[in-house]
Amino acid sequence: MKKSIAIILSFIMVSAVFGGCASTATIEPAQETAQTQTAASEPTEELSKETGAPDVPGIPPSDLLNEGYNPFLSVEFPENYTVYMAEYEDIHEYALYYLHLTTTDSAQDVVTYMSNLLGDSEEESIAQNLSALEDKGIVNIHGTEVDAGLNADCSIEPSQQDGDYEYVEGYVISMVMRIDTEDMEPYGELLLSNINFNALNEVSNYINVADYDMAGIKVNLYQGSTEAHIGCYMENAEEVWNDMTAAMPDNYSEEYRAFSFETSGFSTDIREDLNNGFIHIFQRSEELDAA
Image 1 (cartoon, rainbow, N blue to C red):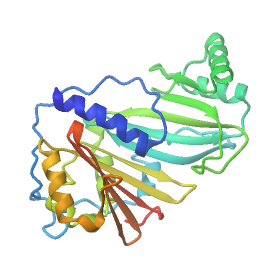
Image 2 (cartoon, rainbow, N blue to C red; image 1 turned 180 degrees about the horizontal axis):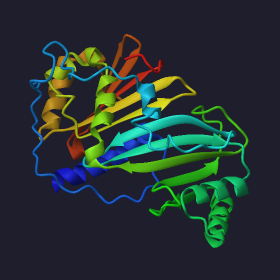
Image 3 (tube, rainbow, N blue to C red; image 1 turned 90 degrees about the horizontal axis):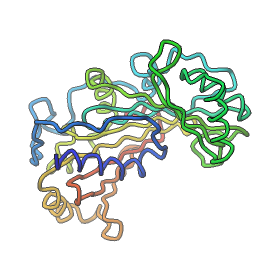
Image 4 (cartoon, rainbow, N blue to C red; image 1 turned 180 degrees about the vertical axis):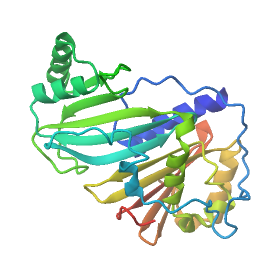
């Protein structure tokens, strides 16, 4: 159970850094797994001896919005609804898929549309959702499992000039759906195919990046950027971190307690969460299909 708690706590910390968008999903906590995560960093048989890269097909990150990955693909949004970002977050025994949109709709129209889309279409519920948006500046709408609605949740809040999307006078919508364990494999392949393992060549001496405990990828169509995150739990995380700082002093900042690398259009940051036994790797590319 200690490891499962560490994963949840570390995910909360990482979400603040990586996700940037609050989850509105009602999700049961991941159950404890019987599988023991090894602390060693030796590559598995499926990994390249040169780079530690797993043998996965090359999948462009923009596919995250396409068939086979996007659970909202069948939704025909109105013309004034614009998708600007998608995210996938693997948090141990289940995952979350986020779709982010902007709209120029009025508060009444966006709340009514999203409430109906998620099956929360009673007049009283719509009125309560509108009141929450107007009074609190944000509303969380929980979907239903009935045929009339998506089994998803969403949040709605006024748009801001934060750089994540092209600013419009209106609202930002974040939709989220749970991805069950049996459906996670294609997402894992997409994620790993968009990690620049060449940039992690030296790091792979200490961490088996492909054997992760949490991970995520974020594709921003407006920025034309891709961000990926890998979180690895290790029993001896502090020992591994100290070994890395001794071996790679030129890339380490004592002030920020982080490593930084620039390789072939990718920026890589490595940060520690030693209290929970995690080492986190973040990569960013300013090209959607750069990997």
